[in-house]
Image 1 (cartoon, helix red, strand yellow):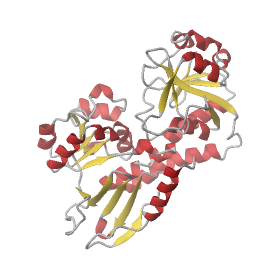
Image 2 (spheres, helix red, strand yellow):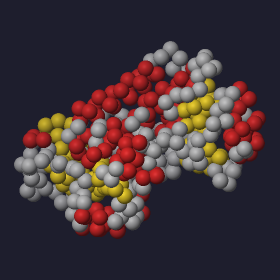
Image 3 (cartoon, one colour):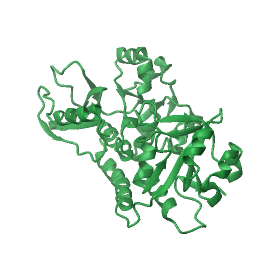
Image 4 (cartoon, one colour):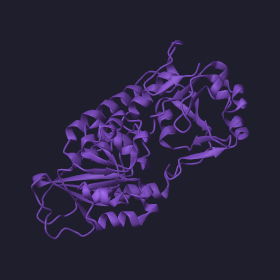
Length: 371
């Protein structure tokens, strides 16, 4: 889409190329980003790095043994390395820390043990290496202070409770609000691992992990069958019996397009990121999606399905869908939305679903076929 907001933002991004003048520091270079548009990183001499997050502020990462320069602008938040006791509230960031071998730096979790699908996070909580410190709107301040927390990483949900952010900052804990979910390109989300790598000094690990995903996407984009012409419906049936679908331009519908498919229903409105899904009455969904070549059922909310019968129990209208009659129904794993690292693998999965001739294929990294 070329909307005024996007063009204004692009202009802002060009302006942002002028490095910030930090007293006593010399600008060296900026991080190269392939897809991410919501953050940038500028490197200065002696290992200092300035992270800028769109609409959320700037953070100066100060190397171990060094101090923040005198005369630093008040609105630049200082993050002192080494970072060992992070309070991680933004669930989508956990997988990115896992990818760069950084889960050990997270001491405090905003999600309880049973809320994690990422095994390493579950294990860390079970062993007591990571502890629950309250959710975003009700943190356990005493625990967070006692643990010597060096940084709180929040999702934009914190803006509903600005008093929490203020209190953490009063206690001297820097608060970083992450915006990976606002990236329009799926791999833009994955690229946020590079930002977390700056905090932990693990840029090389992030480069390698990110390249694995871009290589997978490139393989799909350069394949002979990159445009399959196949239509794909991605949805789940909610508790009121409506179909919850993704909006056009949401990262899931973008993944389907990148995989060579065509997302249906087509006219779900543009995603504004704050609300990337919408509910549609079953009759309307039936009219718009019944001819879809493939169904990918989103099991993240109400649990994984294993059979077509379980799907039909949610709505008998689905029995008339072309994909159901043809046996082209797949289901996501429950971990889909916590695993932000592997979006290249997910695109590869969808591409495989759309192009395989192997009828016996029923298990992929993030999807399985309903029998």
